[in-house]
Image (cartoon, rainbow over all chains, first blue to last red; front, side):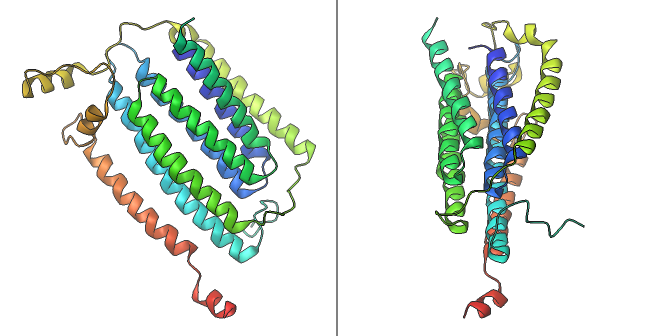
Length: 103
Length: 198
């Protein structure tokens, strides 16, 4: 386990997330892909805190993931509330048919 | 090969495998369960990196909160016998090309730094000298922790000087409260819908 291999892992995870976000048609499934990408960023933060350059502050590096997790949960709460309201209005969660804002 | 390395490769295989299942499984509920496994194994990986508090928060907030919430949203919005949304192969191929493009750009940017990242850094300092100095002034018996403990993270979160995170900590609590109100307001049935249902 080295910093390089951890960066490689988070890199693969991020790319899988991008692929899922682009291919999925279900709104909640797209949310799951976003979660994967955020998780990749978290791995990067913790890896750099652990294998940081000499003199770096690992405690501060561990505080940042906490803020990211808190913000993500807030984002998920609002996003899923919007999804529930959307489903109640339109009875579908297919992004191909949600074209009300298409201009 | 050390035990840490074996565990790391095991966790990597589980994380990547479950992540691929998350984006490819047809049923959204199954994908959410796979995401749960991914997040849990990432928590285990955080433990390997001595980040015990982040691992705890990951399991408690992500798996206990976010994923359960997603599962509730899936159950609220979809029928279990719902027809799946097919993805045309052309779109899938286009997404794969775009992903490979991003992967190529990132590999190009990282390749110049790869030597820096693969050096073993045994002699690392986990705490900035200023923090150690302040803590030693406060407590003569203070010993610098080997890795960020719950105590050191809590200490940092509530410090109000330049080394602390007090203001972001307070702001995030306000944001969480606002998100709570916003989510319940958005998801609530409007009066018009209630009358239509009655």
